[in-house]
Image (cartoon, rainbow over all chains, first blue to last red; front, side, top):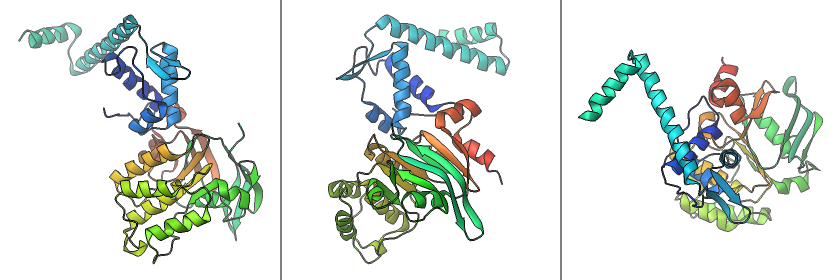
Length: 120
Length: 232
């Protein structure tokens, strides 16, 4: 996995999104143990404090939990992961519609084009 | 937590030139701080004062609560921006020298890093390229278990691939109670590794902030903000 960062936003929010993506896509399955802050920070070449902040935020959202002695784990609540997946899917579709609007397609025309492509 | 490094109203005068003007700064343990500023803004002077190579004209500096002196020097590992090692020495001899000099120098760590970067300990310093010499110097500095690392332009002459390795070395090797102060022009390369930044402008602290606060506040990277603030 390669980590990518945009310039115009805080790094920790981008780390959060990318770890969230790893959880939703099943690369970190429900209940599995996450690598340590240090390992994750080194892998993404980011400051450990920044990585810590992203993980704390994921913890606050309830997607990961920490066990004092043994580390951090992905939640076992698969319904919650599904909700996050739906929400991320929705965001991507909204972004697509926005891009299409800039190209001059309204929502119906975009849908039409989607049908045309998927029916093939 | 007690601050690791404190500058209180530090001024440094070189003849008629005022290199630092009433600088007050605090660095807490556990951070990697970027010391950023254009040429001649006072970065090197600020670092040299913290390791005792220069004395402030007025004001005070303390490291781990100690005044700058023999005791504080054990806690500080400093990478100067110049070559200061004897050209005729072999890398292995320099490692022995550091081992004799610093009780907190870890010889095994130094050899391990040399191995990773494919540098032969048998080579003499004068036969090494500029970039390789810089790597050797950084390895020596990072092989000490210090509380405060002061790195003056650590990646300037090093190719991008080795730069990544060096940044990762810095990330994985500093102890969590320690802090690192890095002066550099290559902001975009080190930005992700930093969590705090200090902008130095004509000997004054223009900004001290966290990297993510800069990005949240200005919607731009530290590198972009730097170019704007210091536009020529």
